[in-house]
Length: 106
Image 1 (cartoon, rainbow, N blue to C red):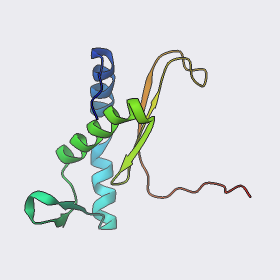
Image 2: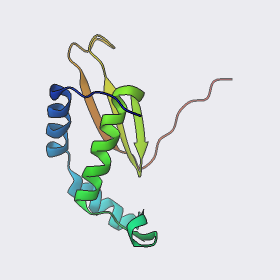
Image 3: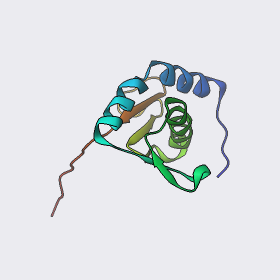
Image 4: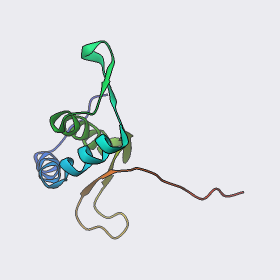
């Protein structure tokens, strides 16, 4: 999928990635033995490096512009365009989710 990202969006994403506490996530992943497959090394499993987490998060943040919410490897990226939910300026959010529950309507 090809899409255009504005300079402003790229700046917002880079700022978010600088402020996100990847070190804390890496500590949690190590404690939980949460590993990602490394396709470059015969699909071996390991706790990802901070740089690998940042690359993955940058990718899902970019993808969230079109898909609004994208998740992988425990991370969830959300994009809120301006004018939605009383948000005046476009906003990105990044979370690391250990558990999540939703109600199920009958």
